[in-house]
Length: 575
Image 1 (cartoon, rainbow, N blue to C red):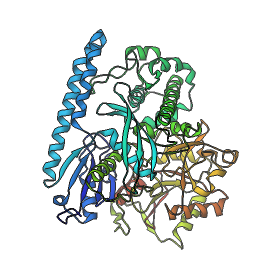
Image 2: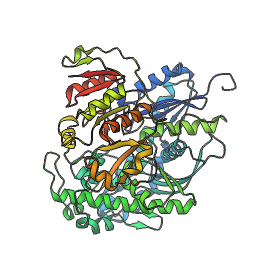
Image 3: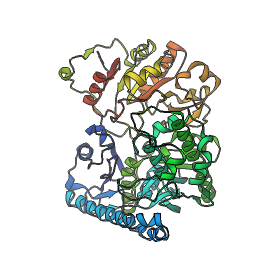
Image 4: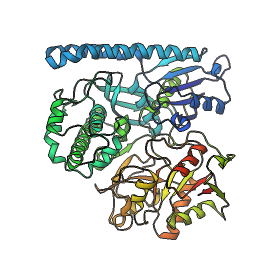
């Protein structure tokens, strides 16, 4: 409680940019977190997260007038730090064309962000609105979610005000009192996220959404073809890396300005139209991009651990969703343990911002952040009206739901699973999942073609009980949030080849009984029938749509895709 007896209520927001989300802390306890897209069905929405905020306040039983602080994940004044970087551009003819638009763009975004914080104050008239530097919110969330008392923190993204890469140290001298301190920062235009997004767009996929598609494509290419180009374009340095503006043009905060130069296209390939076929040159370009990303991330991780001397490493930012690069860092032994939070991208900064605001204003410990990903709305007993989907039917489940589902999966059915609280982050982790047997001939082709409606080269992730992971995967540490690609054992190649990607890895999820009792039981029930404790787990959605956060979204996914059935809170819905 505050001095006046009211609870200390902090609303953390990621809003107005992309991946809008909200988190709520009440007297230090995390009351919940959810991404707006899971409720609005608009993927990567930038809208104010009205549905998320309404759910959070309702869950806590409070009104907007009772919010003490609103914590925002960008600081308007920090955008102005980019203005001095304009001066070197004036020295070249190419740079001069971008100097003034670059300065104007950063100043405009600073003013817009300031207006947004003022607007938030009007929405919550009794709250103090506190903007925080973007990378600091990434750092705080990644560290607090790890539960560790000491850690090296490495955040790599496209742009946070002007920062693109930061090394920090996290310390928690008292339980529930995390603190972070930035030790080193790289600023735009040195941005690995900018590079990956630019090449993703050049290859014909949506920047800010389909970088994972390019990462998957990379396994089918030869990086040698463009290796020297990327070494020139993204050279590493003693403090990190830089970008060569002859290939990656200085950023202007406007979609009117290209990110890649004519020289880049001339030395690689013309931009690919999304409707055009994928050719070998596209595979090779993706492979070289991915290889350079891994090289730079390994370099940054080594620099970070050397700088702090702490061999536990937390990763955050959009580039931390590159599971292959994360797996390479683990494999290299740079740290004793690596942690990626369930929502490493911008959505998770809503939690980070709320944590900073609470820790700076309240002496009570924070709780409910470490070791959890199931933080969103649940629908334990939904009233199902199937009239909007006349092809769907509810049938009774004979006996135990986990045993029944295991039998259905073992027989070859592809089933959606909707249970409990919505997951945080970009991966479905057993509460909003599509499950299938990896033993099914042609299962990957069927999932891509008729269920997910996506590219045929996209892989699918395995989930396995944590206690059995070592039999099939060589990662050597927990992977609870499906954020790390692991090499596989001979047993995995022999028995579950469907989940092994062309690069010899799989993005696994290790499941414990405590974290998800139903899925843990299901995996063992499936193993009792097949001898294999592994299921394919992909998100409950189709390409271009967000993960289904509500029963209506899940029913629509069942009706409009090649799913065979949906287990919705213990109720069996089929066609």
